[in-house]
Image (tube, rainbow, N blue to C red):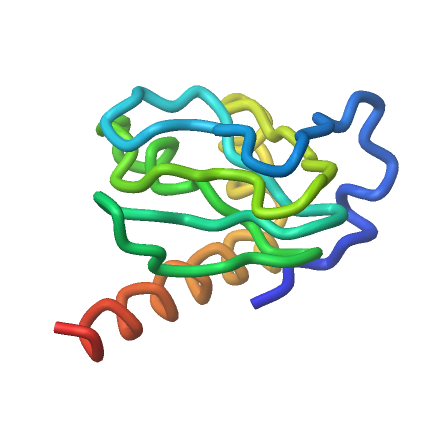
Length: 119
C-alpha cells in the first residue's frame, strides 16, 4: 500500500540507513512514523519477518495512534532512505489531509487482514 511519495519527496532531512540497521525495536515507545523513500525495510515480530516494505510504504504509525509500545522491530533490509514523520506532524496530517488519513487506515486494515490469514 503506497502513500503518495510526492507528499514526502521534499523531506528536508530524510534518514539514511545501512542494510541491517535497526530503525526501532519491538516494545520501544514511538515518537515518529516513517515512509520508505528508497530501499527495503523488514518488520519482524519476535524472530518472524511479517512484512517487507518498499518505496512509498509507511510504517510505525500504530505507536502514534494509540501511544502504546511498538509491536514490531523495523530493520533496513537494504540501504534505504526514510521520511521521518514526527507525531505532531502525523496528527496534523491526519486532521487536515483526508487522503492521508484514509491511506493510513487502509495500511492498517491490510496488515490486520494479513495477520488474521497467518493465524
